[in-house]
Image (tube, rainbow, N blue to C red; front, side, top):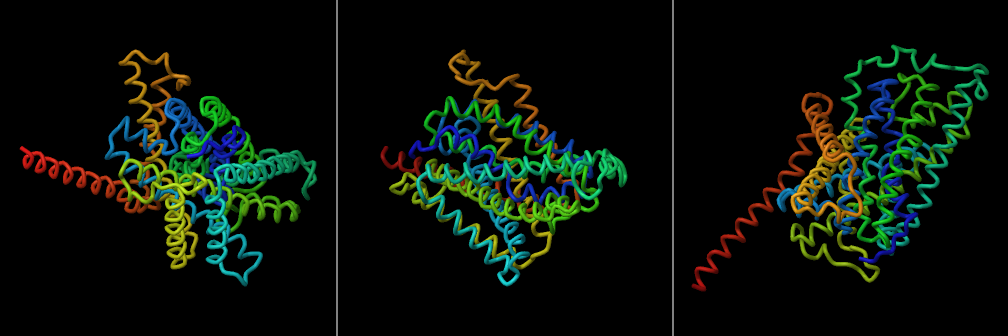
Length: 458
């Protein structure tokens, strides 16, 4: 593949995946379930994603390949696991990208009700398809500017929300303080256990940061760009998640949060900033295109990586004249359209939340795989006395790595005991296990064929 991604592209590609329309809309579900304690849920989620990114950075700098953690899992865990996690990751984006398109369709349908949500979703699918089929440089440039729009919007919201809290703006004319933050049942109206229960959706919101690992193989200077991107993850999470959400629940009662409207827009409408509320509708559209764009990029590269390791059909590993995995991208977007059509059978909020939760399971498995691969990789380097050769090392090994793994495992266990989310395992587990079984059976068949051929030759 062409190394056409610049340093500034890499920095904002991961950001494009983190801030999707599911952040602006899915936050409503988190606030509804956990109340003001959502701040702690997002903070814990931020710590988890930082651990994953630190592990990914070590691997991506040591092995800058476009297939990223599919290759890492193949080399450092097992080919069977790599097949399962690779297909699960691909399916993760095949589910998540339509969720973004559906979210955008919901917003556009409110402004242009004559056009159905389905047609808006398909239109966005066509846009991200064309962007991904151009050169990787064009993809990087589009993500750069789309991400800039989202950053500016969140900064503007934070400034306005702070002014409302201090009584400098809005229709109240007096400081709000903690009246809304601690009202309606206090800081944790549903108890602190709700923080853990909402972690699945939280981790979905943070998904996309790992795409810089997939982009490492197309980056001009991965040894320089990847560590910088990882170091920036911390302040991005604080500046673009923790601060805006803290200010949001300081001006909007948590029991007014819903999935039918962006909670950010609802908060602005509440204080007379209608024009800013409408602006956020445009921002959500931008976020949907951006996250779908980076998600399809990730899906295409994962499928291409699976093909390179003979875990997917051979034709999916071919590149077009621009060095793009065209066949993998086309197959991925077609699968996204199928999910969108399935959504038309149930247009309720339940379908949207379910899509997010299933995506959370498969995404969590990919993140666990990244940490596990790094753990085995570092152990091997220690055993061979080659740690000094690493250009980037995950700090506080193995504690950071093990924390990243076990917190996510704990969240998956919580899913199994949560009535609203348990059903996601019924779809999520087969997404990973079935490819592993098929791959293992093919391996056994190939091994038997080789034994028969060797006996014949003798």
